Length: 272
Image 1 (cartoon, rainbow, N blue to C red):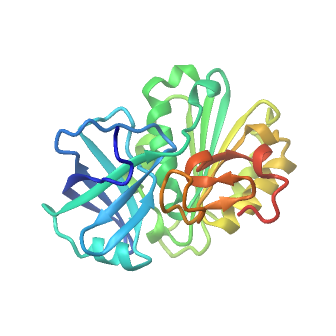
Image 2: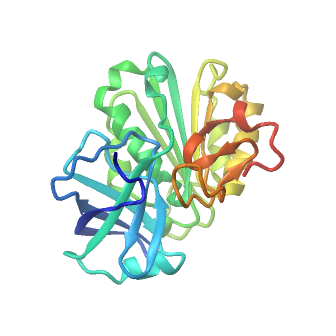
């Protein structure tokens, strides 16, 4: 029986600077029998430092490598940012529930992201874009604090050219180079083309305050609670619902989430 607490070794083979504080680490899984579905998370171990949970940002259909887009915010991530290409880290998992993308078929899908929250949504989009014909349309609406804080800049530009994909960006604070919208990401939900919302799927990931007000706006727009998928961020430690650090109402986010619908969490006091 596989030990869920035993990480497998992985080698850092590339480090992509997304923003001054966010990097994408490309890890070679060294031939390990490892796979994940979009929405699931892994625990990344930095040797002699500790581990932390992250949701992969790469396509779940790529088996040889895995990509993690990470913001430098604490002890583990600060140590990770000091490692050079070629370093060995540990991966355990995957843990938790995935996005039920088979239920998205035939529908319009709205992807709403803020900041580094676009990381798990990138994995979802790459899974959906493997067969775009299955979906009526995919809207990507993404906000960052400044133009410099936008992640995946080149990819977002290329996604715009895909048939059936609509990408809109906004920043809280613009500079002289910015020609796009200015304001929090929820202003993008005023898009008049979002007019069949009772049947649409919405997938949300970002800072807690953005998740909260994004969900409120989606409900005002007519989205059904069961169709609003939230990528919840809690203190996920063990990954198997044993330690209780990630408790959210009746749910262990590491085991029952991190993908939960608003229908599931709407009665929990301050679920974000």
